[in-house]
Image 1: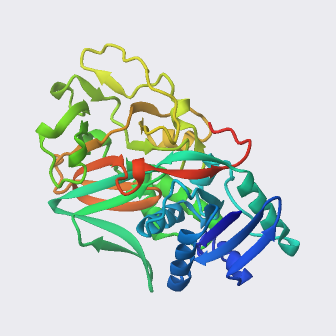
Image 2 (image 1 turned 60 degrees about the horizontal axis):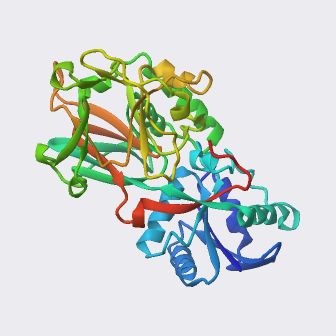
Length: 408
């Protein structure tokens, strides 16, 4: 007996996802290829959310949590299930994609979008449920990103208010976020931050707005990675949430940005450093890691060639990958002309990025970063750590992959 729980973000897809809430039924029973039940949970209704999670927690047999929304909704649901103490090893996560990018859905074989048409006599919905029953179950790594600012630093985020989208300061020195897809800092996050200010209720219009923001940023002065970043290191597990990480807790220095400070340095002064857990980025720029085979973004001080000995990317293997982009144009072209990125690192971490305290000629160090498409501006960042989520056993969840889909 299958028990499906559909967690609906009614605002996703320009409010199209809300069509599933129109069924107005607490539990629907289906007699398909296997008997099953479907419970529909409204994420914005506290009573519905609480009752749905409690019912999922006590459900018997094969239970599945399906997210009806975008990439951000996936981590929202995962965090709610973790908070409720639900064993995610026995409750795989599926997806009905209604967001803007839908990268999580793309890499699991469910496509870039859903029509929202339930079909006559719920025929389309029944087809979706049959697909969920046929799906294979795979491991999927969940990471934690911990960003710390200096004492004189702060964070800003675009928040929706009665007057539209406004820039607001966050009154804390540390932000910690779970990540399933990707994390980056640099010009791509600055583009996304600008996009958040002008976000619309239309997924199509949002893509146009994002392209316009990218075009605008090409003509602005953007700090490069080498200007703001000091080093990338691997640290001890017990230091991942520390406000300050001392050198004695560093296991290995992967690179520094100044050539005279370490054997390995970052090549070509990139505009963005991107951490990818999946082979899709920013709405379908696919297989970035695979397409950059042989292109290493680190160089030795003696200019000896560094061989590409990295492994293929698998989203449940306990490893995570880092690439760099040298130009905004290169990032934009990756969708059409593959191989614009360079491989920087791969491993299980924990990873530490240290930032410079000052930039010559500037009062503050300004940087932009994003976690799964959620954008922030940080003034005077101290460091960032990336590590397997400690709240989730082994840092992994189970996910539903569409039958016969080839994971690239």
